[in-house]
Image (cartoon, rainbow, N blue to C red; front, side, top):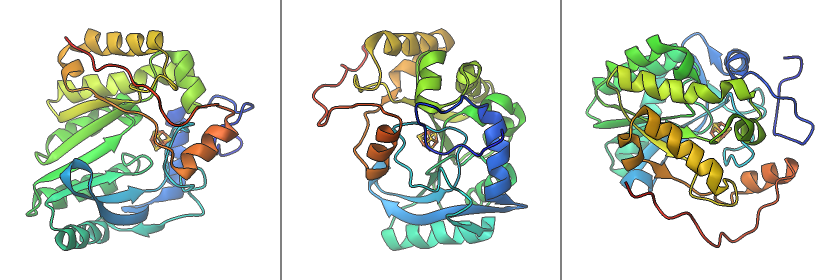
Amino acid sequence: MKVYPGFLTPSSKPFDPVELARITERLVCRNLYRKYTDFYATGVYGGIVTGYTCGCCLRCSFCWVDWSRDFPEKYGRFYSPEESFRMLSKAADNYGTNRLRLSGAEPTLCKDHLLSILDLVERSKYKLFILETNGIIFGVDEDYVRKISEFKKAHVRVSLKAGTPKDFTRKTGAKGESFELPFKGIKNLMKHSCSFHVAAMSADPRIMISSERNALLGKLAEIDKNLLTSLEEEVIDPYQTTLKRLKYAECKIEWPLKKIYKPIKL
Ligand code: SF4
């Protein structure tokens, strides 16, 4: 990879997301330290404190994360696992919640940092730790998933972006061959009995036509039909960064959203 990829444009060249993960780690991980942009509480999941990690291995055109996703060398600051945990605890106690989360960009980068935080959470008073991921790293590193399975407070949310290899490249910038990796990640999570559920940007007809949605649902059903009962289907929100990224990718989308797909019935 000669140039570090930022937001997608029509001339973007497809990249290998595993290679991008390793290159990004050189920018956002330093021994056990990892870059974050912020820590604060939000109302999602009924109230949760979130650490916003810096750097990702995909370049989704509908991504809401701030510009630290595209330019991780310019944003955020390094925190040790203990400092990150302290920031999460402080915000959780101020807000009055016992739920913690890592989100923003890709929290599974910097493996040793994440495992150290999970260890601190496991021994703490907090009840739940939600780990949001695009599933790429869990598709190539089964040992990582096995280690995550040892933490009983950890719940993983795998967010799928597309239903076919071609759409995966169009929306994330990653090579079509890597489309299977998040599904492999899901299989690894099942194999090691991790607590997890799947989310997908699949409720929004503006970004996913129905044949692509059917392909995505079919792939999940092939792995396990039960994945469909807990599937969290999402729509795009008009964050400023999302609108800019869609514009740079020349992806025309109408606002406001007029209809969404009906939830699946099994
Ligand atoms: S939506 Fe998630 S996976 Fe996609 S680029 Fe943004 S942070 Fe990365």
